[in-house]
Picture 1: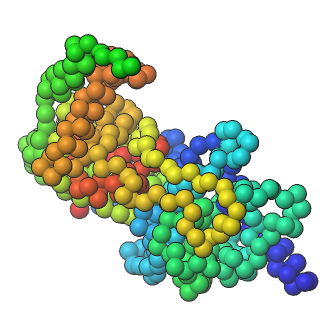
Picture 2: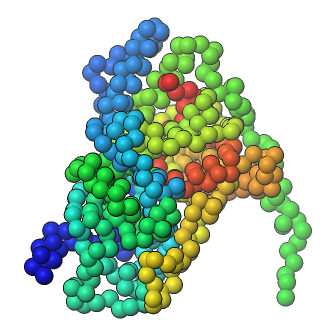
Picture 3: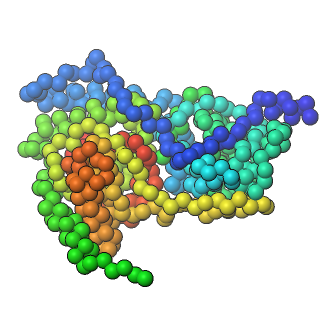
Length: 216
Length: 224
Protein backbone atom coordinates (compact mmCIF):
# COMPACT_ATOMS: atom_id res chain seq x y z
CA UNK A 1 0.00 0.00 0.00
CA UNK A 2 2.80 2.36 0.94
CA UNK A 3 4.55 1.44 -2.28
CA UNK A 4 1.38 2.16 -4.27
CA UNK A 5 0.95 5.54 -2.62
CA UNK A 6 4.56 6.43 -3.35
CA UNK A 7 4.22 5.35 -6.94
CA UNK A 8 1.04 7.33 -7.38
CA UNK A 9 2.59 10.45 -5.94
CA UNK A 10 5.38 10.16 -8.46
CA UNK A 11 3.45 9.13 -11.50
CA UNK A 12 -0.24 9.89 -11.37
CA UNK A 13 -1.41 11.18 -14.69
CA UNK A 14 -4.67 12.32 -16.07
CA UNK A 15 -4.10 11.09 -19.62
CA UNK A 16 -5.93 13.66 -21.72
CA UNK A 17 -8.35 14.03 -18.87
CA UNK A 18 -8.76 17.76 -18.97
CA UNK A 19 -10.15 17.83 -22.45
CA UNK A 20 -13.51 19.43 -21.92
CA UNK A 21 -13.94 21.06 -25.24
CA UNK A 22 -16.58 22.91 -27.09
CA UNK A 23 -14.97 22.27 -30.41
CA UNK A 24 -12.28 20.26 -32.08
CA UNK A 25 -8.78 21.12 -31.01
CA UNK A 26 -6.06 21.31 -33.58
CA UNK A 27 -2.33 21.57 -33.16
CA UNK A 28 -0.64 24.57 -31.76
CA UNK A 29 -0.19 26.94 -34.64
CA UNK A 30 1.10 30.30 -33.63
CA UNK A 31 -0.38 33.13 -35.61
CA UNK A 32 2.71 34.67 -37.03
CA UNK A 33 6.38 34.78 -36.46
CA UNK A 34 9.59 35.96 -37.90
CA UNK A 35 13.15 34.86 -37.74
CA UNK A 36 16.04 37.13 -38.38
CA UNK A 37 18.46 36.18 -41.07
CA UNK A 38 21.87 35.00 -39.99
CA UNK A 39 24.73 37.40 -40.30
CA UNK A 40 26.60 35.04 -42.59
CA UNK A 41 23.93 35.14 -45.29
CA UNK A 42 25.08 36.94 -48.39
CA UNK A 43 23.00 40.05 -48.92
CA UNK A 44 20.56 39.94 -51.82
CA UNK A 45 21.03 42.64 -54.41
CA UNK A 46 19.67 43.27 -57.84
CA UNK A 47 21.77 41.83 -60.62
CA UNK A 48 23.24 39.15 -58.38
CA UNK A 49 25.87 36.87 -59.84
CA UNK A 50 25.25 33.15 -60.06
CA UNK A 51 28.01 32.56 -57.53
CA UNK A 52 26.38 34.90 -55.07
CA UNK A 53 22.99 33.25 -55.54
CA UNK A 54 24.53 29.81 -55.04
CA UNK A 55 26.38 30.96 -51.96
CA UNK A 56 23.19 32.41 -50.58
CA UNK A 57 21.34 29.17 -51.24
CA UNK A 58 23.99 27.15 -49.43
CA UNK A 59 23.80 29.52 -46.47
CA UNK A 60 19.99 29.33 -46.40
CA UNK A 61 20.09 25.53 -46.46
CA UNK A 62 22.52 25.56 -43.54
CA UNK A 63 20.22 27.88 -41.65
CA UNK A 64 17.22 25.63 -42.33
CA UNK A 65 19.14 22.53 -41.24
CA UNK A 66 20.04 24.21 -37.99
CA UNK A 67 16.33 24.42 -37.14
CA UNK A 68 15.98 20.63 -37.13
CA UNK A 69 15.88 19.04 -33.67
CA UNK A 70 19.20 18.04 -32.20
CA UNK A 71 19.30 14.49 -30.98
CA UNK A 72 16.29 12.19 -31.13
CA UNK A 73 12.83 13.37 -32.07
CA UNK A 74 9.46 11.65 -32.35
CA UNK A 75 7.21 11.70 -35.41
CA UNK A 76 3.62 10.47 -35.18
CA UNK A 77 1.54 9.79 -38.29
CA UNK A 78 -2.04 9.72 -37.01
CA UNK A 79 -3.52 8.69 -40.36
CA UNK A 80 -1.43 5.53 -40.58
CA UNK A 81 -0.99 5.03 -36.82
CA UNK A 82 2.80 5.00 -36.91
CA UNK A 83 5.31 6.39 -34.46
CA UNK A 84 8.90 6.94 -35.49
CA UNK A 85 11.85 7.90 -33.39
CA UNK A 86 14.38 9.62 -35.59
CA UNK A 87 17.77 11.20 -35.31
CA UNK A 88 18.42 13.51 -38.25
CA UNK A 89 17.47 11.37 -41.25
CA UNK A 90 17.94 8.03 -39.52
CA UNK A 91 14.94 6.10 -38.22
CA UNK A 92 15.80 4.55 -34.87
CA UNK A 93 12.35 3.10 -34.16
CA UNK A 94 9.43 2.39 -36.48
CA UNK A 95 6.48 1.40 -34.31
CA UNK A 96 2.81 0.61 -34.79
CA UNK A 97 0.71 2.90 -32.59
CA UNK A 98 -2.89 3.71 -31.84
CA UNK A 99 -4.03 7.31 -32.00
CA UNK A 100 -7.23 9.29 -31.52
CA UNK A 101 -10.53 7.91 -32.76
CA UNK A 102 -11.92 11.27 -33.85
CA UNK A 103 -15.24 10.47 -32.19
CA UNK A 104 -17.31 12.85 -30.09
CA UNK A 105 -18.86 12.43 -26.66
CA UNK A 106 -21.50 14.93 -25.60
CA UNK A 107 -21.66 15.50 -21.85
CA UNK A 108 -25.07 14.30 -20.68
CA UNK A 109 -27.16 17.19 -19.38
CA UNK A 110 -24.56 19.79 -20.30
CA UNK A 111 -25.41 21.21 -23.71
CA UNK A 112 -22.36 22.58 -25.49
CA UNK A 113 -19.88 20.51 -23.50
CA UNK A 114 -18.29 17.78 -25.49
CA UNK A 115 -15.08 15.86 -25.85
CA UNK A 116 -13.45 15.36 -29.23
CA UNK A 117 -11.16 12.37 -29.09
CA UNK A 118 -8.47 13.57 -31.48
CA UNK A 119 -4.74 13.28 -31.12
CA UNK A 120 -3.54 16.88 -31.33
CA UNK A 121 -1.50 17.85 -34.41
CA UNK A 122 1.50 20.10 -34.35
CA UNK A 123 4.90 20.20 -32.72
CA UNK A 124 5.12 19.53 -29.00
CA UNK A 125 7.87 18.90 -26.47
CA UNK A 126 8.19 16.05 -24.02
CA UNK A 127 7.23 17.54 -20.67
CA UNK A 128 7.25 14.52 -18.39
CA UNK A 129 8.67 10.99 -18.27
CA UNK A 130 6.96 8.72 -15.81
CA UNK A 131 7.48 5.16 -14.65
CA UNK A 132 4.63 2.99 -13.41
CA UNK A 133 2.02 5.59 -14.29
CA UNK A 134 -1.39 5.42 -12.69
CA UNK A 135 -4.33 6.56 -14.78
CA UNK A 136 -6.54 9.15 -13.13
CA UNK A 137 -9.76 8.50 -14.97
CA UNK A 138 -11.19 11.75 -16.26
CA UNK A 139 -14.89 12.62 -16.35
CA UNK A 140 -15.42 11.31 -19.87
CA UNK A 141 -14.23 7.83 -18.90
CA UNK A 142 -17.14 7.54 -16.48
CA UNK A 143 -19.70 9.29 -18.65
CA UNK A 144 -18.78 7.11 -21.61
CA UNK A 145 -19.69 4.07 -19.55
CA UNK A 146 -22.96 5.62 -18.48
CA UNK A 147 -21.69 6.11 -14.94
CA UNK A 148 -21.77 9.13 -12.69
CA UNK A 149 -18.60 11.09 -12.05
CA UNK A 150 -17.28 10.09 -8.59
CA UNK A 151 -16.75 12.71 -5.93
CA UNK A 152 -14.02 10.71 -4.21
CA UNK A 153 -10.75 11.25 -6.12
CA UNK A 154 -9.51 7.83 -5.08
CA UNK A 155 -12.22 6.24 -7.21
CA UNK A 156 -10.58 7.72 -10.28
CA UNK A 157 -7.28 5.92 -9.85
CA UNK A 158 -6.65 2.96 -12.12
CA UNK A 159 -3.14 1.48 -11.90
CA UNK A 160 -1.80 -0.89 -14.51
CA UNK A 161 -3.67 0.18 -17.61
CA UNK A 162 -1.05 2.53 -19.05
CA UNK A 163 1.92 0.18 -19.10
CA UNK A 164 5.30 0.67 -17.50
CA UNK A 165 6.00 4.18 -18.77
CA UNK A 166 4.24 7.34 -19.87
CA UNK A 167 5.82 10.16 -21.85
CA UNK A 168 3.78 13.34 -21.59
CA UNK A 169 3.76 15.99 -24.27
CA UNK A 170 1.37 18.49 -22.71
CA UNK A 171 -2.31 19.20 -22.05
CA UNK A 172 -2.86 15.77 -20.56
CA UNK A 173 -1.68 13.85 -23.62
CA UNK A 174 0.76 10.96 -23.19
CA UNK A 175 2.52 8.26 -25.10
CA UNK A 176 1.82 5.17 -23.02
CA UNK A 177 1.31 1.42 -23.13
CA UNK A 178 -1.85 -0.58 -23.58
CA UNK A 179 -3.52 -3.74 -22.39
CA UNK A 180 -5.09 -4.15 -25.83
CA UNK A 181 -2.32 -4.88 -28.28
CA UNK A 182 -4.75 -6.14 -30.91
CA UNK A 183 -6.00 -2.57 -31.36
CA UNK A 184 -2.55 -1.23 -32.21
CA UNK A 185 -2.58 0.24 -35.70
CA UNK A 186 -6.12 1.56 -35.30
CA UNK A 187 -7.60 4.92 -34.39
CA UNK A 188 -9.18 3.94 -31.12
CA UNK A 189 -7.79 6.18 -28.37
CA UNK A 190 -9.18 9.24 -26.64
CA UNK A 191 -6.25 11.32 -27.90
CA UNK A 192 -3.23 9.67 -26.28
CA UNK A 193 -0.78 7.57 -28.27
CA UNK A 194 -0.55 3.90 -27.37
CA UNK A 195 2.41 1.64 -28.05
CA UNK A 196 3.39 -1.93 -27.31
CA UNK A 197 5.47 -2.49 -24.16
CA UNK A 198 8.72 -2.96 -26.09
CA UNK A 199 8.29 0.12 -28.27
CA UNK A 200 7.23 2.19 -25.28
CA UNK A 201 10.40 1.19 -23.46
CA UNK A 202 12.47 2.40 -26.41
CA UNK A 203 10.61 5.70 -26.61
CA UNK A 204 11.06 6.21 -22.89
CA UNK A 205 14.76 5.42 -23.12
CA UNK A 206 15.47 7.66 -26.11
CA UNK A 207 13.37 10.65 -25.08
CA UNK A 208 14.16 13.30 -22.55
CA UNK A 209 12.44 16.42 -21.33
CA UNK A 210 12.33 18.78 -24.31
CA UNK A 211 12.44 16.09 -26.99
CA UNK A 212 10.44 17.24 -29.99
CA UNK A 213 7.19 15.39 -30.80
CA UNK A 214 5.86 16.18 -34.28
CA UNK A 215 2.35 14.96 -34.93
CA UNK A 216 0.51 15.15 -38.23
CA UNK B 1 -46.79 18.74 -50.52
CA UNK B 2 -43.86 19.40 -52.78
CA UNK B 3 -43.35 22.98 -53.81
CA UNK B 4 -41.96 23.21 -57.26
CA UNK B 5 -39.43 25.91 -57.81
CA UNK B 6 -39.55 27.69 -61.13
CA UNK B 7 -37.19 26.16 -63.62
CA UNK B 8 -35.40 29.47 -64.10
CA UNK B 9 -34.46 29.75 -60.42
CA UNK B 10 -32.82 26.34 -60.50
CA UNK B 11 -31.02 26.79 -63.76
CA UNK B 12 -29.83 30.33 -63.16
CA UNK B 13 -27.32 29.52 -60.37
CA UNK B 14 -25.94 26.64 -62.40
CA UNK B 15 -25.55 28.82 -65.47
CA UNK B 16 -23.92 31.58 -63.46
CA UNK B 17 -21.55 29.09 -61.90
CA UNK B 18 -20.65 27.60 -65.24
CA UNK B 19 -20.11 30.98 -66.81
CA UNK B 20 -17.94 32.02 -63.87
CA UNK B 21 -15.89 28.89 -64.29
CA UNK B 22 -15.49 29.39 -67.98
CA UNK B 23 -14.55 33.01 -67.50
CA UNK B 24 -11.65 32.13 -65.20
CA UNK B 25 -8.83 34.54 -65.69
CA UNK B 26 -5.81 33.35 -67.55
CA UNK B 27 -5.11 29.72 -66.82
CA UNK B 28 -1.58 28.67 -65.98
CA UNK B 29 -0.51 25.23 -66.99
CA UNK B 30 2.55 23.56 -65.58
CA UNK B 31 5.19 24.72 -68.07
CA UNK B 32 4.07 28.33 -67.70
CA UNK B 33 4.84 28.19 -64.02
CA UNK B 34 8.58 28.15 -64.57
CA UNK B 35 10.31 31.40 -63.77
CA UNK B 36 10.56 33.76 -66.69
CA UNK B 37 13.33 32.84 -69.06
CA UNK B 38 13.86 29.59 -67.24
CA UNK B 39 17.46 30.53 -66.68
CA UNK B 40 19.53 29.38 -63.77
CA UNK B 41 19.53 32.76 -62.14
CA UNK B 42 15.75 32.90 -62.03
CA UNK B 43 15.58 29.36 -60.72
CA UNK B 44 18.07 30.12 -57.97
CA UNK B 45 16.22 33.29 -57.00
CA UNK B 46 12.93 31.41 -56.75
CA UNK B 47 14.48 28.55 -54.78
CA UNK B 48 16.11 31.04 -52.43
CA UNK B 49 12.83 32.88 -51.96
CA UNK B 50 11.16 29.63 -50.93
CA UNK B 51 14.02 28.79 -48.58
CA UNK B 52 13.78 32.21 -46.94
CA UNK B 53 10.06 31.75 -46.40
CA UNK B 54 10.49 28.19 -45.17
CA UNK B 55 13.06 29.28 -42.58
CA UNK B 56 10.42 31.59 -41.11
CA UNK B 57 7.93 28.71 -40.88
CA UNK B 58 10.43 26.15 -39.62
CA UNK B 59 11.54 28.48 -36.81
CA UNK B 60 8.16 27.98 -35.12
CA UNK B 61 6.69 24.91 -33.40
CA UNK B 62 4.23 24.00 -36.13
CA UNK B 63 3.57 21.63 -38.99
CA UNK B 64 3.40 23.25 -42.41
CA UNK B 65 2.88 22.36 -46.06
CA UNK B 66 5.41 22.98 -48.80
CA UNK B 67 4.09 22.67 -52.34
CA UNK B 68 6.73 22.34 -55.03
CA UNK B 69 4.95 22.84 -58.33
CA UNK B 70 7.85 21.82 -60.55
CA UNK B 71 8.52 18.62 -58.62
CA UNK B 72 4.79 18.01 -58.24
CA UNK B 73 5.11 17.23 -54.58
CA UNK B 74 3.35 18.41 -51.48
CA UNK B 75 5.39 17.90 -48.36
CA UNK B 76 4.18 17.91 -44.79
CA UNK B 77 7.06 19.38 -42.81
CA UNK B 78 8.12 20.50 -39.38
CA UNK B 79 11.37 22.25 -38.45
CA UNK B 80 12.51 21.84 -42.04
CA UNK B 81 12.15 18.05 -41.85
CA UNK B 82 10.00 16.21 -44.34
CA UNK B 83 7.45 14.17 -42.39
CA UNK B 84 5.33 12.95 -45.27
CA UNK B 85 5.18 13.45 -49.03
CA UNK B 86 2.10 13.55 -51.21
CA UNK B 87 2.45 13.16 -54.97
CA UNK B 88 0.64 15.74 -57.10
CA UNK B 89 -0.49 14.17 -60.37
CA UNK B 90 -1.05 17.50 -62.09
CA UNK B 91 -1.99 21.08 -61.33
CA UNK B 92 -3.18 24.25 -62.93
CA UNK B 93 -3.75 27.74 -61.67
CA UNK B 94 -5.96 30.68 -62.37
CA UNK B 95 -5.31 34.28 -61.48
CA UNK B 96 -1.96 35.75 -60.52
CA UNK B 97 0.48 32.96 -61.21
CA UNK B 98 3.80 34.77 -61.43
CA UNK B 99 4.61 35.28 -57.79
CA UNK B 100 3.19 33.00 -55.12
CA UNK B 101 4.36 35.30 -52.37
CA UNK B 102 4.80 34.26 -48.75
CA UNK B 103 2.96 31.73 -46.65
CA UNK B 104 -0.79 31.21 -46.76
CA UNK B 105 -2.83 30.05 -43.79
CA UNK B 106 -5.65 27.56 -43.97
CA UNK B 107 -8.93 29.06 -42.88
CA UNK B 108 -10.63 25.75 -42.13
CA UNK B 109 -10.08 22.07 -42.74
CA UNK B 110 -12.63 20.01 -44.66
CA UNK B 111 -15.69 19.08 -42.64
CA UNK B 112 -15.65 15.48 -41.46
CA UNK B 113 -18.64 13.59 -40.18
CA UNK B 114 -17.62 12.50 -36.68
CA UNK B 115 -19.39 9.55 -35.08
CA UNK B 116 -20.85 10.17 -31.63
CA UNK B 117 -20.13 7.91 -28.72
CA UNK B 118 -23.34 6.71 -27.10
CA UNK B 119 -22.81 6.35 -23.36
CA UNK B 120 -23.57 2.81 -22.28
CA UNK B 121 -22.56 0.47 -19.49
CA UNK B 122 -20.20 -2.44 -20.03
CA UNK B 123 -18.01 -0.42 -22.32
CA UNK B 124 -14.36 -1.09 -21.95
CA UNK B 125 -11.38 -0.38 -24.08
CA UNK B 126 -11.24 -3.90 -25.38
CA UNK B 127 -14.22 -3.32 -27.59
CA UNK B 128 -14.35 -0.89 -30.44
CA UNK B 129 -17.10 1.50 -29.48
CA UNK B 130 -18.33 4.16 -31.89
CA UNK B 131 -16.70 3.34 -35.20
CA UNK B 132 -13.60 5.54 -35.32
CA UNK B 133 -12.93 7.79 -38.25
CA UNK B 134 -10.26 6.67 -40.66
CA UNK B 135 -8.74 7.75 -43.94
CA UNK B 136 -11.68 6.41 -45.93
CA UNK B 137 -13.99 8.82 -44.13
CA UNK B 138 -12.04 11.76 -45.49
CA UNK B 139 -13.29 13.52 -48.60
CA UNK B 140 -11.43 12.91 -51.85
CA UNK B 141 -12.52 16.19 -53.42
CA UNK B 142 -12.78 19.45 -51.52
CA UNK B 143 -11.85 23.11 -51.43
CA UNK B 144 -9.30 24.58 -49.07
CA UNK B 145 -9.61 28.32 -48.46
CA UNK B 146 -6.34 29.98 -47.52
CA UNK B 147 -5.62 33.53 -46.44
CA UNK B 148 -4.79 35.72 -48.14
CA UNK B 149 -6.96 35.11 -51.17
CA UNK B 150 -6.11 31.58 -52.25
CA UNK B 151 -8.54 28.80 -53.05
CA UNK B 152 -7.04 25.33 -53.47
CA UNK B 153 -9.24 22.86 -55.25
CA UNK B 154 -8.23 19.27 -54.48
CA UNK B 155 -9.72 16.47 -56.51
CA UNK B 156 -9.09 13.18 -58.26
CA UNK B 157 -8.23 12.86 -61.95
CA UNK B 158 -11.17 13.74 -64.18
CA UNK B 159 -10.78 10.52 -66.15
CA UNK B 160 -10.97 8.29 -63.08
CA UNK B 161 -13.74 10.04 -61.20
CA UNK B 162 -15.63 12.28 -63.65
CA UNK B 163 -18.55 12.82 -61.30
CA UNK B 164 -16.36 13.91 -58.38
CA UNK B 165 -14.33 16.10 -60.70
CA UNK B 166 -17.41 17.83 -62.12
CA UNK B 167 -18.92 18.26 -58.67
CA UNK B 168 -15.75 19.86 -57.38
CA UNK B 169 -15.51 22.24 -60.31
CA UNK B 170 -19.09 23.32 -59.76
CA UNK B 171 -18.41 23.80 -56.07
CA UNK B 172 -15.35 25.88 -56.87
CA UNK B 173 -17.34 28.03 -59.25
CA UNK B 174 -20.07 28.53 -56.70
CA UNK B 175 -17.56 29.42 -53.97
CA UNK B 176 -15.88 32.00 -56.19
CA UNK B 177 -19.19 33.39 -57.29
CA UNK B 178 -20.39 33.65 -53.68
CA UNK B 179 -17.17 35.33 -52.64
CA UNK B 180 -17.39 37.70 -55.57
CA UNK B 181 -20.93 38.60 -54.57
CA UNK B 182 -19.85 39.03 -50.94
CA UNK B 183 -22.13 36.30 -49.66
CA UNK B 184 -19.73 34.37 -47.48
CA UNK B 185 -18.19 37.17 -45.46
CA UNK B 186 -15.00 37.38 -47.49
CA UNK B 187 -13.51 40.83 -47.51
CA UNK B 188 -12.27 40.06 -50.98
CA UNK B 189 -12.78 37.11 -53.29
CA UNK B 190 -9.89 34.71 -53.74
CA UNK B 191 -7.76 36.16 -56.48
CA UNK B 192 -5.96 32.90 -57.04
CA UNK B 193 -7.22 29.41 -57.60
CA UNK B 194 -4.90 26.43 -57.58
CA UNK B 195 -6.25 23.09 -58.71
CA UNK B 196 -4.38 20.04 -57.49
CA UNK B 197 -5.08 16.63 -58.94
CA UNK B 198 -4.24 13.92 -56.45
CA UNK B 199 -5.02 10.24 -56.31
CA UNK B 200 -8.05 9.49 -54.19
CA UNK B 201 -5.88 8.08 -51.39
CA UNK B 202 -3.51 11.02 -51.41
CA UNK B 203 -6.38 13.51 -51.42
CA UNK B 204 -7.81 11.80 -48.36
CA UNK B 205 -4.42 11.75 -46.70
CA UNK B 206 -4.11 15.50 -47.21
CA UNK B 207 -7.62 16.12 -45.88
CA UNK B 208 -6.67 14.16 -42.78
CA UNK B 209 -3.43 16.00 -42.17
CA UNK B 210 -4.44 19.63 -42.58
CA UNK B 211 -5.40 21.63 -39.51
CA UNK B 212 -6.99 25.02 -39.03
CA UNK B 213 -4.42 27.76 -39.47
CA UNK B 214 -1.87 25.45 -41.07
CA UNK B 215 0.62 27.38 -43.19
CA UNK B 216 1.16 26.60 -46.86
CA UNK B 217 4.21 27.67 -48.80
CA UNK B 218 4.15 27.44 -52.60
CA UNK B 219 7.20 27.48 -54.82
CA UNK B 220 7.46 27.05 -58.55
CA UNK B 221 10.82 25.50 -57.80
CA UNK B 222 12.60 24.57 -54.58
CA UNK B 223 16.21 23.94 -53.76
CA UNK B 224 17.26 20.31 -54.34
